[in-house]
Structures are given as C-alpha cells and as structure tokens.
Image 1 (cartoon, rainbow, N blue to C red):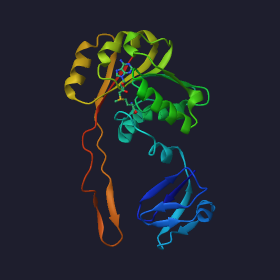
Image 2 (image 1 turned 120 degrees about the vertical axis):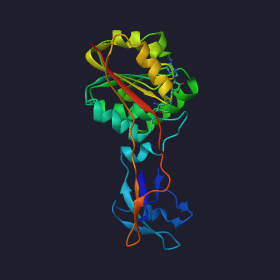
Image 3 (image 1 turned 180 degrees about the vertical axis):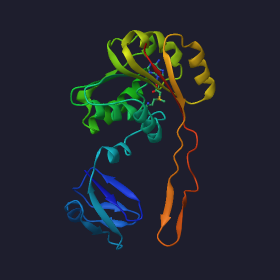
Image 4 (image 1 turned 135 degrees about the vertical axis):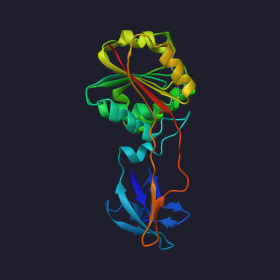
Length: 243
Ligand code: SAM
C-alpha cells in the first residue's frame, strides 16, 4: 500500500499497485507505482507525484465511515490529558466506525487491549473491517452489546464514552475502573455536558474541554493565512477520575 502525494498537498491512497492508477491529474503507470518510496513519478499529463510508504495516520483517513467519528483534533486533546500507552486496558462505549478505537488500540499494543461496545450490527461490521485493514484485531475485543447493560471488564485504566447518554454508564464505569483510572466522555452539546455533570456523584471532575485548531494555507510568495473554512465546534470532552 502506498501514498501518492502531490507537492500541492493533494494525496491519493492506493491499496493495489498491480494496475495503472487513474486520477483527474492523469494516469500513473503501474511500473511507476512500484518504484521505491521517495521516487517522483509523473502521470501521462506530466503531473508529478511523490511516492510514500503508508503509515497508520495515512490509512486511517481512508477508512469506511458509518456514524460520525471523533475528530482528530479531539483525539489529540484526549491524548494530551490522559496518558495512553502500551499495555493499558481500555473500555470504549460506542465503537461507531472504530476511528477512536483504532488510535487507542495502536497505542496499547502489543500487550494491552481495547474492549469496545457497540449496539448496532451495521456499525460493528464496518468497524471490524477497518480493524482488519489496520491489522489491529488482536488488540481489540469488539462487543455487540449495550454498554448501559453493564461493563464486564474490571481493573480498567481508562473508559472512553462516545455515546449519547453517558450518565447511564456512570455506575458501571465506577465499578470497572481502577482507583485513579480515567473516564472520558465526548459530548456534542453543552446541555448533555451539564446533565452528565449534574448526575455525577462519585467521580472527581478533572475538567470540561473544547479544542480549536486552525490550519493555515501557504502558497510560496503569495499567501500565508488561516484557511477560509474551518470546522469550529465538534464536541466537548468531559474528563473524570475514579476516586
Ligand atoms: N467514536 C466513534 C468513532 O470514532 O468512530 C464514533 C461513535 S458514534 C458517535 C456513537 C456510537 O455509539 C454509534 O455507533 C452508536 O450506535 C453507539 N451507541 C450508542 N449508544 C450505545 C450504547 N448504549 N452502547 C454501545 N454503543 C452505543
């Protein structure tokens, strides 16, 4: 699998290098696709592409999506607040397309595991295919179960919820987490944040967060400014610790 990158930033991810690749920048011959990473190849229209070996971050951008996944900037926020490392035991509520699960599994491997609960079979199947593509199935136990019916795992380091009603998971999360373990909940609106805070009786509140990221546009000698259209609000992150 490779990544074709134009110098202007546009990129294409390819799983099959055994046939010519067609883009609106022209056709790239299969012999060129099989050149060493770092090679610069040209399409039949003379457009240049750099060949890169793909990595986790590249592939994740091309996975199939079911429901809305957690935005990368919010995954970054979670990683800045909670230590996430190899060997951890993590429970997740709401696998969805498995984007967040994949980041977590990639961090806890090879000795840790992510136990991820999903109620919808169609999303469960999408996520499973995505984990296969990323070769992460050994580090994820995917459960077609409602997390609000109970969490089977004990002595858990971190529970992440991306479900609409995390307040219904609070008691199970409390029983499952280690002392000092983290509970992180992604929520789309402040009404839900307030409900979660009001219904929490046992956890220590660490904080309520929102993350803004601005990407800048650069054209040599002409432009250096924030991009015109940016995502502003995605979700809030509420973080607790088990005491
Ligand atoms: N975090 C996911 C990702 O990055 O791809 C997206 C999660 S999506 C916003 C929410 C998911 O939670 C949906 O797939 C939904 O079916 C699932 N869900 C909702 N309530 C649930 C529950 N009580 N137990 C397990 N899954 C639940």
